[in-house]
Length: 129
Image 1 (cartoon, rainbow, N blue to C red):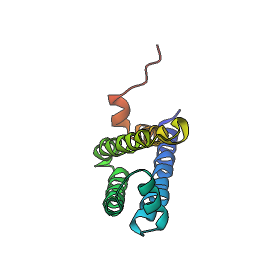
Image 2: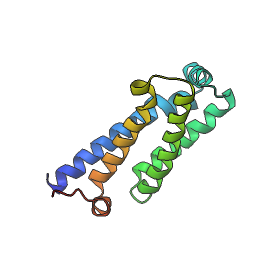
Image 3: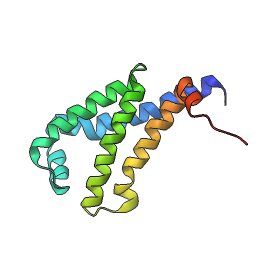
Image 4: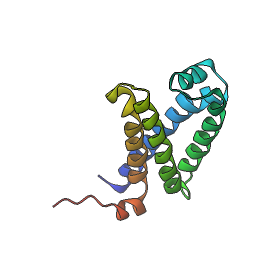
């Protein structure tokens, strides 16, 4: 795959990840939609945590899209996604649809970043032997 194609596919994956985070997670939390409170309550979170988590997700998403801070944001996002996974495990949620959803998001996030960032590809090369 050419460098240009890898970069374009990487930005597409990163864009899908960012759009999902902004549309399905950040927006309901920041706008105080009932679905955010209901979902968090069902997982055992108190109502006061919805807004701070939404703000954190928004900041991390913006940092992820900015080239100078994308690796830092990805590492911090993995902490957030790990906490989401732990919450789903504690709540007894289904494995493939809920518990592993954080892994799926992480793969999109890191995959997009790896494809669009040559320095990251040099740090973590794919070996073909």
